[in-house]
Every structure is written in structure tokens, then in C-alpha cells.
Length: 344
Length: 182
View 1 (cartoon, chains in turn cyan, orange):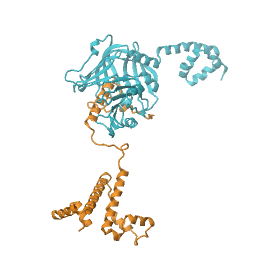
View 2 (view 1 turned 90 degrees about the horizontal axis):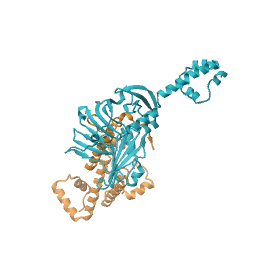
View 3 (view 1 turned 135 degrees about the vertical axis):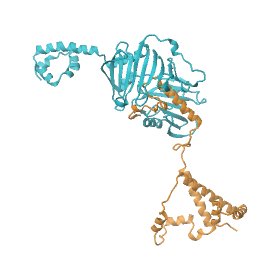
View 4 (view 1 turned 120 degrees about the vertical axis):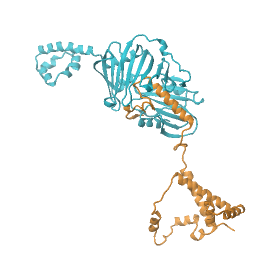
């Protein structure tokens, strides 16, 4: 290597920035030219390019910092708006959203079959009301996107900027390391870091949730108080919510966990009701990969009845063995069967 | 008077007319030995029927022709094992006698009983019940599905609800996980 090139790069932080940001952008031919240049010209070039590189880095925040900011904002922001959820092969759903930190209310307005459906999360329990069936289901804890977990299985990169619902947003692309997972793209508000749009998958399999309108500001607290209408059929979820499986198992020795989990999934939470099922006990285990979730429900029967693994009409996988009945929900057939078979 | 084996078989098959059946029943009421023989045959036939229902064996149409063609012209020389089996299984001459017949029926019953024990379904390996689910299991499935759907609905772009008949969605197919971790 010519002597001039060696001296051209001072061994400090600026040089590192030069190496990391500018050099990859310079064509190989130009790099050779650069190495052949005289020292004063190289210093002038560096003096010009380094501030430029610095500016580029400042203008586009790091992707992981943006994801952390959006996760934090999700827990504090107050806003209301309209969103559209589009999934391939099914009619798009439109919903009104009210958000106040860890509380939220979603009201579906389209398609007609979903109109009047409601989800109210008061930060403690979640009510989901299906108006066409006058059926209300109460659960414990809400499903959140876990950006920290997603960042572990995906590489995040700021792809550029765009506009959503009239607001400027950074676009963060998350590319999965596991080819079986779907890629994600998130539009993050440049000012308050609200999540404005999320795209999942690509091509024909792409699903999107996008804010159409969004207004930041206080939300009336009464919107997060809800009780089922008279005559509604109610399904409640009682029991204790645990974030640690072993802790959950201490209160219920019959509680089973799968020995096999789909790639990227991990234990998220459990609801254990030791007095459920007529005092025999029942539990609900939730597993997540950051975005998607699946559930294992267990009902302790204490008998020797065995039912072979079978697909239910509702799309889950049911099995009864070892004194308990189980159902695995929220996974495609093959991994659901593996999970169910690995339950002891 | 003693019953002929053929009479016993006809009686168990239910092919006798009213008069003959009444005569045999009257005889069985008074002859303990024949009654016991008929009972052994009845149990053996039931076992065979049940075995056939569980694991039906069907021979091809030309099975017996092939067997007959495959038989040697002369009777093979009997080995020591065959002779030992002959002590359990009566010789041709003996098979016509009542004792020979009794021994054959008893041997068949023992073999069937042993097969029953050997091939009996083990509780830990095969389902005790594999048919319709009981109502409490159906209720468990319904409530679990409702709870799961309500849970995932709080994150609309997370997992798709399962069994959403209105939308035709049955799972999160676009996120098929690959391998499994122990």
C-alpha cells in the first residue's frame, strides 16, 4: 500500500466514523485513486467528508434506539385515532383507537360483521365484546409488541423516512435472522415516537396496520371503564397472573410446560386458577416471539382418561393425557402438534 | 347321550330349528360336561369375532388354492417339536374322540386368552377413548378459544384469531415457525 494512504487516516474517533460511514460508500476505483493522492489533498477531503458523515449519522437515529423509544412512548402516550388493519384474503378492518399509556380501547367499525365489536383494556384486565353474538370475554393482561424480543431475533435498520396520517415518520425495517419468520417494517413518529404504521410480511402475504388519523391529547378516563351489557354471555378468566413459569408452578404442581417450542418463541405469562374446573385447577400459558402469540390451556382432571391429539373445529389442537386436558391455540398445524406432543 | 361337535357349532351359530334347539338346551341342562364345552366354544367364538373386528384379516380369493398347491405330496417327517405339539394337539385319530375335541377347544381358548393379554391396548400408549369428546371437553375448547382470541385481539397485527369463522382465518399461517427448540 502506498505510504500516503497510510498517513491519510488519523487514528481517532473521526477516522472510525470515516471508516464505517464513508468508506463503504466510495467505489473501489475511487478508493485506489484516494490512496494515490498526495497528503494535503487527502486531509482536505477528510475535512470535507467527516462533517458530512457526522451529519448523516445525526439525521437518522439508530434503529434500536427508535424501537426503544417507541416501546417507551407506547406506555405513556395519549392519543385517539382511526386505524385500518389489512390482512391478505380477508376484508380490511377499521377501528377507532383510544390510547392512554397502558390503557386502550378499540372499537371496530368495519366490516359490517365486526361493527360494534369492542376491546377495552383498563391496564388490569381486558374485555373483548362481540356485539353480533352479545358475547363478552374477559382475559388477564394484554398482548403487546415486545420490541426488545423482536430485536433479538431480527436485525433492525433505518430505511428512510415517510409520512403517515400527515405526520413525519422514520421507517425501521426489521429483517429476521430466521428465514421462516416474517420481516417487519415500522413507521415511527419523528416527534413523539408513536407507532403509526406496521407492515408485516412481504408481497401477497403482507399484513398492514396503519393509522389513518391520529390526535395527541388527553382521553376521557370513562372510555376505559366498561362492563358487559345485560343479557350478554360472559366468559371470565380468573386466577393469578404470573410472569415466571416456575413461580406459577409452585402454586400448581400439576402445571405442565411444553418441552418443544417453535423457533423464536418463549414463555410470556401464565394465568393459574387453582380453584377452576370444580376445584381441580386450570391454567393458561402464553408464549410469544415479540409479535405473535400462542396459548396452551390446561385443565387438570386428575383421571386416567386419554384422548389422542386431534384438531378442533376452532382450529386448535386438543389432547388429553396424564390427568389433564390441553389445547394449543394460535400456531400453524405442524408446530402446534409438536408443542402438544411435547406436553407431559 | 353326548352332543356331536357339529351339533354344538350349529347350536352356537343359531342355525338349528326350534325343536332341535329345545332338545339341545334340555340336554345341556342335565349334562355339565357338554355345557362346559359349549361355554368354552361360545367364549372362543366371541374372542375370535372381537379380534377380527379390531384387526380384520382378509385372505385373497385364491389363498386356499395357493395353500393347497404349496402342500408337499407326502406328509413331512415330524420333528420332535411337532411331536411335542402333538401331545397338546391331538393326533388325527384322537381328534374324532370327545377328549381330543375338548383338548382342542381348550387349547384354542388358551391361545386366544394369551393373545388377548399380549395384544391388549396399553393405557399409556393408546387412547382409552378416541371418539366424541365429552361436553365438558367441548366447553373447555370453546372457552379457551374465546379467551385466546380476546387476548390476541388486543394487538391487532399480532397473531390472527383462531376459528374466526366470520373472516375465515384459522391461524397465523404467514408466520410459520421453522424448527423447534428443546
